[in-house]
Image (cartoon, rainbow, N blue to C red; front, side, top):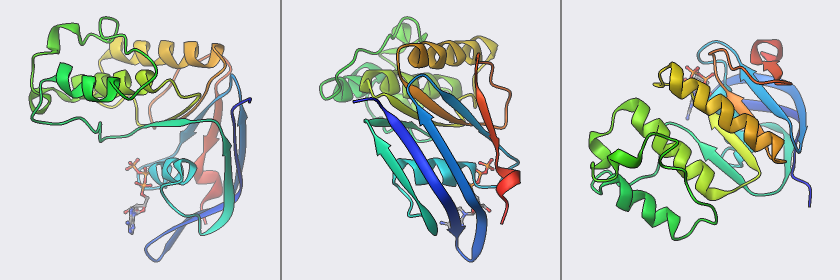
Length: 190
Ligand SMILES: Nc1ncnc2c1ncn2[C@@H]1O[C@H](COP(=O)(O)OP(=O)(O)OP(=O)(O)O)[C@@H](O)[C@H]1O
């Protein structure tokens, strides 16, 4: 089955505030979309709506295909060495995480709590790839990464899409990818 992600007439309310409304999007195999907008516009909220973790105030989200989410919480045991923490998920996941390419191979004995921000982000990417899901939802995937890390994420997303996957990238930073679509949340402010 072809992966697909469709949002129709979405509105999002957090607390008493309506953040955005009348937002529709449709992504299919091979496509990537950057969600941009200033702090607090609701980029993270949109990612969580698309993931099914938040209920829309109005509208609907339809999805076919497994999804994998990267946000600021990598869901790795802080007390375990990185290798063991990743192995926990590796036993459940279908794919293999490219530790060497992600710059993690020399860190497998380091407890997760000692990892730097960028190293944590790389570990989250290892989990993302391990999940082997066609739909990637990436909330600020470039945070904490150096220029080499940024280029790596751009390359990984490009390869994922060429391989038939799709990605939604919430980021206020420039993201370089051929054919990248763009949605500015400010255009949907309620
Ligand atoms: N549980 C909540 N209850 C009430 N308001 C919330 C809740 N969670 C988030 N908000 C508010 O919703 C707004 C949007 O938050 P969100 O994290 O989606 O924004 P964002 O565009 O991702 O911001 P940033 O770029 O700063 O990460 C913010 O004003 C935030 O304070």
